[in-house]
Image (tube, rainbow, N blue to C red):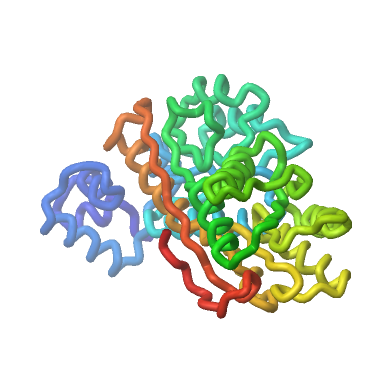
Amino acid sequence: MVNMQKIAALAGVSIATVSRALNKSGPVKEATRARILQLAGEYQYTPNPIARSLSTQKTDTIGLILPEMADEFFMDIIRGIDEEAYRANRFLLVSSFHTQRDIAATLLEFMSSGRVDGVILMAPEGKNGLVETLRRSRRPLVLLNPPGNAQEFVYFKINNFQGAYAIVEHLFGHGYHRIGMITGPNGNIDADERLNGCLEAGRQHDLPIAPSFIMPGDFSARSGYYAFMRLMSQMEKPEAVFAANDMMAMGAYQAARSLNLRIPQDIALAGFDDIFLSQLLTPRLTTVHVPIVELGSKAVRYLLQMINGEVDPSAPYHEELTAGLVIGGSCGCESVAAAVPL
């Protein structure tokens, strides 16, 4: 059985040098590193992860905490983060918080368990003393799409306001004057910003969104179905409906079919997120492309810089990613099915 001592003897170096070369944890001459890696490959030597963890005081694992993972959007986030972690030879440990598990308790468990070197957290609602919990963090931490009171932390976010403004402006450009919106849950920063972008587009075009045309949803397809039904049951009906995410737009498609309404001839529809399922709708959904993979990749790379001491983990850092329109046939356009930069 080949161990680190054997590799060191064959390479004519110390065990410490072999460890630094394999773990990339210290300076080693390039020629020496190449020789060690060559020998490790020839003898199919793989460092023991437990021993490596003890020697480096690192687990090579990052934690990811998400809201209740109920739709494809969160699966895409996990996939993007896991791919970037894999490229960096790191493992990913995923957890979620929901009605049965408090976000603060979940976060503290991750932070104190010693099972992860750092954590990526998506908590767009910021409830239950989240900021106070974050301040007690003992591990490097990166937030995704955080609430507005998280300015003192490191975060990456999508420009939800800009995306919603652009897609409603696009609907106005078609000549629709009566635009309805299906919102996300109250207190959710993504939902709030998308609502604000929609309302601002109406103000800028002197076509304010009527309060009766704003229906609450919770980002689920079921809520989109019932919100659309309520919109279309009113005496005055919208000409176009913007759903604050694609899952609710899918529910609206189902409701339109139930009412024998043609899309876009009788009612135009638009969504937000550009999840894979939205591509399967007929006509193709016009939506806002969210760069989910890029968002996750940036979060992982910055978190690893924090873990490795390349940046100050206590210093705030903020980055906002822009969205783009994906033009389908649901708004009345010829389907382009590619992101249009804003």
